[in-house]
Each structure stands twice: as C-alpha cells, then as structure tokens.
Image (cartoon, rainbow over all chains, first blue to last red; front, top):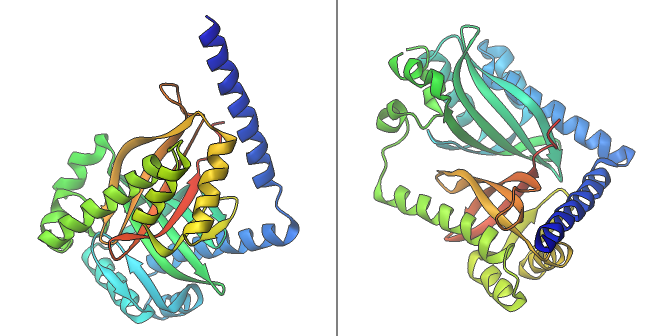
Amino acid sequence: MMKNAKLMFATFAGISVLSVAFAKANEENVADAKMMASEIALAQKHFKAINETDLKKKKALFAEVYDPNVHFVSPRAIVDGRAELEKLFDEIHKESPGVIFQDIGEIEAHHDIVRVHWATIDSGVSNGLTGDDFLKIKNGKVSEVYIIVNGWTKASAGNGQEK
Amino acid sequence: MTALAATALSMSPISVSGLIHEQREGDVQMAQTVETLLRGNIHGVFSEPDAEKRHKAIARLWADDGVFVDHNDRYEGHARIALAADALDKKFPNFIFTERGEIIAIPGAGKLNWGFGLAGAEPVITGSDVLVTKGDKIGAIYTFLDPPKK
C-alpha cells in the first residue's frame, strides 16, 4: 500500500515536473516563435515541392525549399544534391501518378529540426501508408531529409500490396 | 500501379524486392548498427543510473563530435551529451526509457519510439529519437516529445 502510494506520488511528481517542462518549452520568446513558424512553413512547402508535378513549378519550389547540397535518405535511395532529388521525385511521379504525400497531425520544430507525420493519398483516398519525415534546416533551407516509413495500416495492407 | 509512389519510399514487400535497393549484407549490418546504437543510447546512456557506466557508454556509442538535440538544447561532443544525460538522471532518478514498437532502420539512419517513466508503469511521456550514424557510431540524435494527449 505504502509502496503504491510512493509510486503514485513519484508518478504525479514526474507528471507535474514534466508539465512544467512542457510549459517552459512552449513559452518560446517571440524570436523563437517566429523561427518555429518559418520552419513549419518550410516543412509544409517541402510537401508542396515533392507533390508538384509541373516541372517548372517544381523547380522553383525545390530551389525555394532545399539547400543545393541537400542530403536525402530514404528506404528507396540516398540522394545528394537538389538536382538529384528533383530527378528522384520525377521518377516517383512517373511511376505513381495521382499519389501524393499529405502531412497529418502536428508539425513540430525545435533547434533547426522539424518532424512531420504523413500519409499517402492515392487519387484522393488514403491508401494506408504512413511515415515521418525529419528535416534539418540550415540558413532557411532544408539541408537534410530522413524519411521514415512506418508501414501500412493493417486495414489497408492488402489493398496496398495488390495495386 | 498507383501505389508505387507509396511503395517507392516504403518498406512493403513490393518495394523491398524491387524499388528499394536490394538488401545487401552491408545494409543488414548497417541496420543492426543503427538498432544497436538507438537501443544503447536509451538504455545504456539515458536510463543508466551509474554515472561512470553512463559516461563510458557515451564514449563507446557516440562519435567524438556527435550532436544530441532535444527540445531543451543542442549538445555537441561527449562532455555536453554527458551533461544532458546527467541532468536527466538527476531530475528523474527512477525513470527509465522503454522501447515502443519496432525500430525502423534505413541506411545510415533510424527511428525509435520510446516511453519515459517508472519501470513497470505506464510511461509519463512518449517521444521519438531519430539517429544518424557517423561511421559505426552515433553522429546525431534528434529527439521529439509527443504532444500531450488531448
């Protein structure tokens, strides 16, 4: 009983200290808040860029979003440089017309890194594949991208593999 | 074939067999390294109560110029990473990290979802570590806390 009470107290103490930590983390000063807002906007543009199929618009978006020497790591390929990254997404769009990456949930940013959660949408319908992108920002551009694919949700696994 | 874009970046059987480059022995070894490093860091460094063991684990796992970034700060090098780990141990001496779900490894990088709390209890907080390797050591870990459940 005493042990349980101690455990509960320790847990509550932990929660309250962590809540304070959260509150502190959320109390960004104006400069930090602005920086975070711009990094979140950049992450949203990252999705716009990789989903864009008009070559001219895509080039402009890639120039806006990615560092010329961007380092891109995914299960499919490791790519270095903006031009190579453009080529990779050209291939992906040719292979899979109509499929886009949609950001879902909250985009989080701190200390020049951003986490975004995504799902793939096939012709307007979620096909059940989800993942996380981790972006590193340098001088206002995305300099590193790590694509983590979490997998197919169970309900859609069969559909995804049949197509 | 419309799911190909999805599979292009996925771990599905289709992409593993075709679109993702073939699983060579080196890749498997790399994946094992990523997993070992991710696990070693949460258990051997950030859950280790003994400071000496903790510091030895940092030296063993982290590159000399490794960078650890969490919501509080950016810590570069063994001494700074030790400061971060020591501070967490001091603040939450009985808390440990536990793994949640499977580690996902890609060449040279990987992600581990974790919980943090008292051993045997529900985690008080959850989050993710994404790791980037440098040689066979940790080059960087970027940590994100999950937002509190609404």
